[in-house]
Image (cartoon, rainbow, N blue to C red):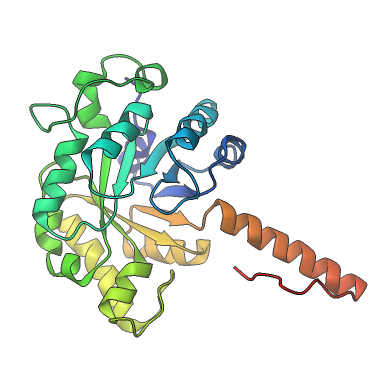
Length: 268
């Protein structure tokens, strides 16, 4: 079975740069995979896509050598195992609130005797090579998302879950939950109380011997997170990067030509 390059990067003492794919299109995935990310995650939870999009996206990224992952919609064994069988080498599971839920997640990721993953790596055997049954438990990375006050209250117990590789912070939902709706959901939090929480999560993860990841909106904030100790950061995503680049290009054109754009432009 192929090595997981994310683990190799960590072994070299470097942080991992993860990209985000929400557009269900193989060509978009192929273009993103050619840009130099260490890993790319297909967002099956909130992305505009389904399994019939996921498979060709993974196929399109294979030649790049980027580590392919997926965020599943929920803590449900069928979709987690299907993403693994399609070729995902890391899986992010949203809304893990307790150690019991984290343990269930780990069990869906791992083959017996460690877990209960069913054997049938349909595409993975071609994308990852043979001997998957013996080696996948050590190669696949599982991230539990901490996104709620309940999860934060159970942080130490979640981090101590045997077989869990790391905690992935969803700052939008976490901010929304901790502030009880007072603060709008979003990335790159500067509120002192949120910075304190984000730094605490890193400390708890590292004390437990696991990794910490953070979803960021900008490379500047991601670099800040790396300085705090985050082992992986996700910076923006496909549709947001496309919209930002288009906005910059159009704004420059309007500025240089003194022309106005059409009504109804959507800011992202």
